[in-house]
Each structure stands twice: as C-alpha cells, then as structure tokens.
Image (tube, rainbow, N blue to C red; front, side):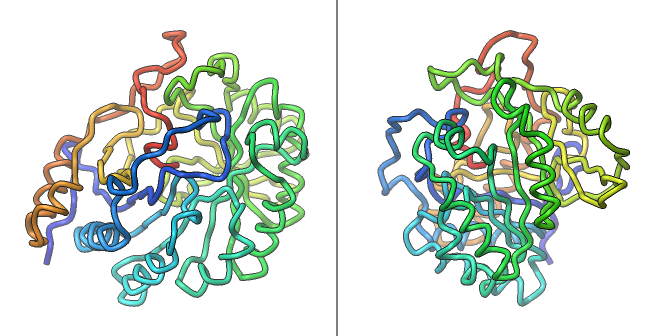
Length: 334
C-alpha cells in the first residue's frame, strides 16, 4: 500500500486540481489579456499523460480531482479523459471527480459529464446583466451560459456558482445574484479578486472588494449561520436562516486560509504548484516523459510535495497589482 502524501507541515494532500488546457473561449479581464498567445500543443500534457499523472496521485491518496483550464471543455476529446477517470470512481479510490467551467460548453457536455461520474460542477458567473457579462468576459455570451446551466441541472448535476467580487462592477448585483441562485436551488461562492499576474489593463487594487464588507451587507438582510462544511477547498460557508441557502466565501486576502490546505495544482504543461500564492513549482512533465516506471513518477511527486510552503504571499498592502505572483490565473488553472 502506498504511503499517502504528507507535506512538511503534516497536511495530507487529498485534493488535486488539474488544468487540461490554457485555452479559453472567453477573455475575462481579471484572468487573461484580450490577445493571448497560447502554448504550443507539444508543450501540453497529452490526455494519456494526464491520465497517468492523475492516476498516480489517486494511488497516493488523492480523493478529489477537479478539472480546470483555461476552459477545460474546449480541450479536444476531453470526454475521453473524463471517461477514463471514471474507473477510479468505480473502484472507490477516488471519491469525487468535478470540474470548474465558464458554462459555455455545458449545453453540449452536461449529460456526458454526468455519465462519466461527475456530480457537481462549479460555474464561473460574475453578473446577470448581458451587457456587463460581455464587458467582463470580452467574448462571452450570457444566453449560452444560461442554457448551459439549464442543461447541467437537467442532467442531474449539482451546480455551484462562483462569483468574483469586483468593486464598482457587480456590487449592486449582490442580492440579485444570491436570490437568483436561491430560486434555482444553487449554492453561490463569492471570491476575492486575487493578485495573479499583471495583464496590463486592470487596476487590481481598485477592483478589490473585501468579502468582510460583502458578508456584512448580506447579514443586514437576514441572519447568517456559520457552517462547518468543507468541500475540500478554501471556501468557508454560511446558511441563510430564512431560506436555507448556502453561501461560500473564498478570502485569500482578508483571511489567510492556508492552515488547512490539502491541495496542489498541476498546470496543463505538467508543472506542479503546491501553493497558488507562491512562485515555487516543480516539473512533472519531465519524469512523465523520461520514464515509464510509475515509481519514478511517484518519487518526483513526493519530492514536490516535500517543498510545499506553509502559506501564500497574497498581500494588497504592498499596493502592487501582482503581489508576489507573476503568472496568469489561466496558466495555473482555475
């Protein structure tokens, strides 16, 4: 039996987030430049390499696997990978296979995802105003995303909406978004904008809307009950007493959530980032391609986990747009 992955601070690594592509059919202003230069395909892990890498992590104790991008559903033949990962669900080695998506391709893939064993999806949606949606995503079409949400729910997928809190952009939609989710029996999680990579046209400091303020405004309208719930990620949850709606808050800036970190991220090129808010990373693509021996790959994985830091380095007090992290969120994966 494999010894599970334990980092230097005695945290068991049970949650893996894997980017399968750096490409996306949107250009969200806090994530990408409008004219992106994407990686050559030869630098990306193949679907077979992704399978081998994820399977190694499952053997080493990972119980939750989240697929991200870019937009993961624009990756050619991506359902081949999801279907392959389903074998780990069937064996019981993997407890959850899930995806973070912009929703644009769900109308096409929702039923297939459910058939592959996916039961929950996170959909990024920052506004219900069609003009503002086009502005924030640059290329996005809100009706297409709304049809995708309909398709996901019709397929039996549990939907959670992820909304980036942006000062001066969606503040006035706080109650509109939460009520819309409640009416559709969807949870919602608000996320503080993170200082990930200066893309040259955004005032990240001016965009920052503390979730302390957002939560206080929600509490003015009704009682919020703190919940111990955890989905394996950094969100902290409350329940609205009057409606039973569950609302999450991801607060990397106003509250450091590192003490219970159980996750690592792998980019579409096979780099493993053991902390979202640090530049340190290790290469797993080399070991994947240089050796067919699973033992060599597992050795490389353990060496990377041994370098996992105690916490991140996001801090707006520096009054710098990019904090200490220069890469784009689209590079690291959702």
